[in-house]
Amino acid sequence: MAATPEISVKIAADGSQATLVAPPGLDAALLTPATLLFLVKAAGVLIDQEVERNVAAFAAAYGSGATDRRDIIARSVPAVPGEDGRVEWHKGFDPRPAHAPASAERTDHYQGQHYAPVKTGDIVGMAHGPTDGTDGRNVRGGLLKARPGKPVAIKFQPMLTIDSGGRIIAQAAGVLMLKDNALSVTQSLEVPGQVDFSTGNIDFPGSVTIAGGVGSGFKVTAGGDIHVGGLIEVAEIRCGGDLIARGGMAGNGRGTLEVERNVQIVYLEKVVGALTGDLVVERVIADCKLVVGGDLKCPNGNILGGDINVTGSLLVKAIGSESYTPTIITLGEVPLLQGARVQVSKAIEQINAALGRLAEQARLIKLNPRPSPSEKEKLTEISYEASQQNQELAKWATKLSEIEAAVRARRKLDVHVAKVIQPGVKFHIGECLVVFKTAAKGPLWICWDEQRHLMYKAGSGIARPLSEIAHVSRGHSAPPAEGLVPAVAA
Amino acid sequence: MRVLVVDDSKTMRNIVKGVLGTIGATAVEEASDGQDALSRVDAFNPDLILLDWNMPVMDGITFVKSYRGAKKTTPIIMVTTEAEKTRVIEAIQAGVNNYAVKPFTPESLSKIIETTMAKVAAKKAA
Image (cartoon, rainbow over all chains, first blue to last red; front, side):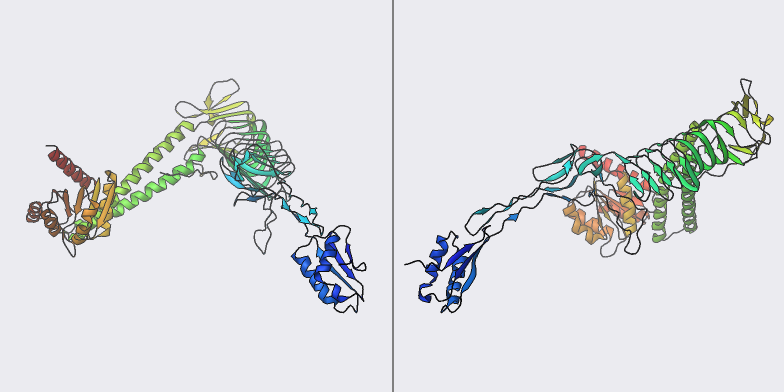
């Protein structure tokens, strides 16, 4: 068959399409699909079913040849790029920062990031690898290579492994942290600046180090230690370990501290708090309401105003002020056990009341010399109930004994004042109220003698009755301390 | 020790179960009358039966007679308000091993159970 030179096949430079062109006036009998396919194939176009259909349609459409015809008869199949690798986080383990609004109506600007705690062996997510993509082809059948997906952007630190199934497994306990695209398990959180609206509240199961301070209205809660570089304002600080602050805390009467171990700080002003361990203050404790479970040491500073309850020793330079600032110090008790003692005593009281009611019920039934079968059954129930209550009572009584033994072991009176105790200072020591009406110059040491009389020593002198330098009266128990009250279970 | 507790009062069954818990019973089954007890006893195969006397459908003494009539030797303790001598004799003759009179204390019931089981064990050994 002779070629028809006026029919042409134009292929795009990038091979993306092939166009069949036929001018008018050609012999339609010669423009068969077979002829056209021959020409298309000769031009280098890969013939597939779609090309065959398009060529057949071209031939049919050309008809009598009244007009020219130009149709695209072949298109390339584009390459499909691969999917990038990704991590699918399991519920509760997403480490990405999120300041989710508390509700649809209000946004809590104080709300901070949630940190996901992990244990060794926890599966925190699935790593899905990249896919290769699907290659395409141009109209000549040439390969259009697909771009493969990129690997997961996250770098997994050694304490996280990925198994053959793609599971991401924690190899250490701590908190999941994603920082600069590196995923790790950490036991500590670092806040490079202040705790403020940029960070939100901090609630972290491990230790927290804050380079700056803590702004007013914010809460910092840590399961471990808290280190603070700057000023702590009217904030709530709760920590399961030590609080170590290179600045002070100005609580304005609303700032609070709850510390399970020790506190070391430059100053405390108008702070309410309780700590189980020792309190070490560099400069001053002013107008604070504090319960200290251990020793209070302020050897170069003053206690000025406020209400301080100290279980252990007190070491301070001066207490009170020349302007008679009311300052109350409670000593010789174990305030953190007081609450527990009250709870246990209440429980014992309630059980005794219940036993009393049961005894009364039994007594009333026994007034009848011939109790009915149902009354006899009732007596059995009462007897059983009383037995249960007595077992409970025994447990609580043991608990109370343990608490009282702990109180006896821990309570002490050991007060060292280097410079002066000013007038207006009151000490609650057990049942005694000690009021300083004039200044008592230091160095002073206040303690009990063997008969638990209140004594003092000035300098290296002998011990003398405290009543010589202060007014001492009996029968004034200090009000129960508020603060940390450990949960008590029988 | 596997124990079948038979009493129409759920409260009493709970009290007895509580006592059994303190003396190391490993499994406790409950029945609300003699008929119910008969339907459960073979499948449960208890080591001890604690049985009330006055129950609807089938009372305790009828259960004992029926159970012993089938040649079953599991120890039975009657736990009941019936304290008259004739009643006690009737129960012993029917085949109960021991008798606990309500009201009882948890301690007294424990003691009766332990004494009964010790006697049964001694008899088996002999």
